[in-house]
Image (cartoon, rainbow, N blue to C red; front, side):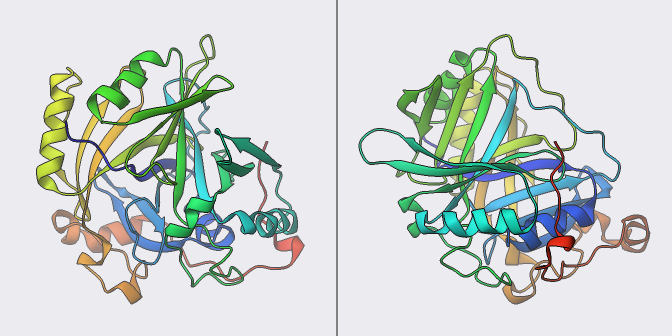
Length: 332
């Protein structure tokens, strides 16, 4: 059986495009690696944030729909997205959260057996998306964007650490992770079952929290639209797709998203999964040093560029912010 290699990206829904850009490129210091449009709705932006090149496993993406109604986390969703940092960076992020006037919980220490400790800060973005910053020694092996003002390489976010699925009953979701995608179970703690692929380090982890009786999630701003799992190339993608089809999960055909090739399917608990290839990457249509500077359109929409650019709201990269009265806020 072919296995996925961990998390490729997480895609969520936002409301205000400029506020989304300010939070993820400004406050969190991720690189804005691509500004494009939703390939299924070209009147809407699709933003990509990550490390210097938007490497698989570093990527957070957003569909920012202006005025989008707030969603609700619940069962059938990826409810929590965890970001990796070095353990020594936790104090920096606490100070940064305080300076920006943002609410947070932590730091708390989670131990997953032996000396494997995670130091965790919980907070939300402006739309209510549940986020964590997780300090873990394994983040040393991950790349970071070194160009964010006020955030040194030793403090920078080093891609995705894990995702947490909330499930009404997690057994069916867990079977797909293990039997179809090749994850392996690691441990159970406080009602959360952890699974890993690859080397089991940051970026390869998924937690399943069974919360039967909890209301189902409602899609909207502040919720995750889907999680994508890494496959190295087209051949492996087709093999994993065959495994998904054999499990009667009705995968889509392969879809060309320009920067990777995608297959989508919904697991029995309701979460939308994607299989995404590592290549060709974000430098296919603009040089690495200019990533994110210009609106990039797929070829089928290029002839509509003038109309699309007139429809999309104007945005600009955030300037460095230091004064407390300029802080971004987190809604309850």
